[in-house]
Image (tube, rainbow, N blue to C red):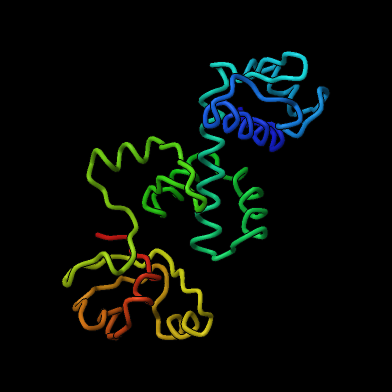
Length: 215
């Protein structure tokens, strides 16, 4: 059953207050809700939380969903801030909106795209998912910056995280696009790679901003 966005936000705040900050429960004020809040009542009906006057306790039944809610939010932060380069308040706002869409396996796809990050941009832990456990067990490397490839290796360009708009336009005009196959031929003194029949030479700074799905 998919929760409402408000219920997910309450679960997220409750998980942080209890599991990460070590409190037994959280106050309604901390959760930013009133006693008659629809999201809180939704969680109460599902037996995910226990309301004790002005305090709310996370029940064992609600822990798995609360943990995954935190995971989705922090993956959204990684995607919005690292890939789309939206930082600060605008990035936080977009991440809060986007996290509610990461259901039905979308979170696993984004996690794999980001190479199974363990922390959010603020340094807080991202709870691992099944995709993380499977990747570790199978030795899958996921998506990495071009700087982590060795000469002779290659793969599919997953995304470009180039902050300079002119450099981004230049790369795209030359055909360096997500979905294109890349082969690295040299790493020093410049990173030299081929896309199709064209060869490019870029510096290490730019190479860090080209992410490749190795394989």
